[in-house]
Length: 206
Image 1: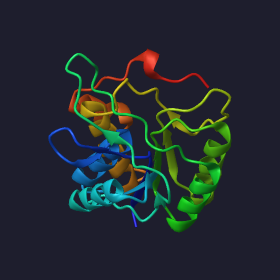
Image 2: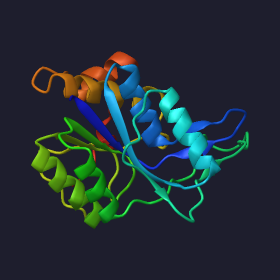
Image 3: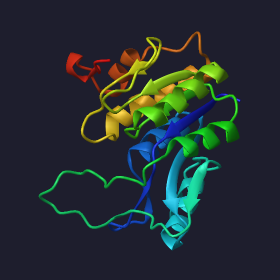
Image 4: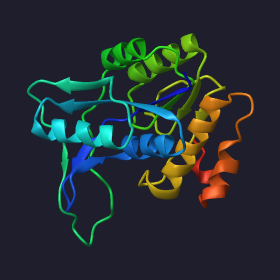
């Protein structure tokens, strides 16, 4: 299977609509719209808001087999916006190294893994090891200081809001790379096609 695994805990948006939201969802939805198979890895509460979130993922064709339901935790809600504030969703529930180890064991043989949420070094190490074992491509959009990544990992500092043209570029690149690892276009080529330009300041220092 040409599977794209997107690592990013979602939130439930309740601002006029009720739907799954957050940077990870934006990227996973872009993968699905591009014809790819996306599985979202994250944590949500074992509550009514979590139920509604999962139903919306189903509706949008985003897999959630490795979306962890945490007993006693509340699914983060993104309520009505302040019209004067930026369009930035709240953070999802943080992922631990054990969560990621379990998820990557449950989702064998991914072709591409996209890390959307900032991860502590120990958690990112788990992802790097799992990706290396699967022989997959790894794209990291955000990572914590002190993390050490192999040179073959593609690292991009995302804009303040991972949505719109940026999420679309990442999703299309991931879907194309999963479908044809040796023939996929570069992220820059895909980004140019959707109107997002990757500037030099957005490439992360290692």
